[in-house]
Image 1 (cartoon, rainbow, N blue to C red):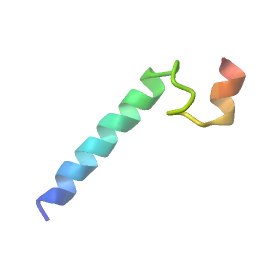
Image 2 (cartoon, rainbow, N blue to C red):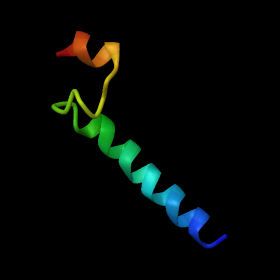
Image 3 (cartoon, helix red, strand yellow):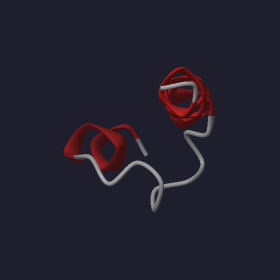
Length: 37
C-alpha cells in the first residue's frame, strides 16, 4: 500500500513534465502537439 502513493507521485511528475517538454513529440504523441509544432 505504501508503494501506491509513491507510484502516483511518479506519474504526476511525468505528467507535469509532459506539457513542459513540448519539444519531445515522442513523449506527447498527440494530434494537438503536431499541430502546434
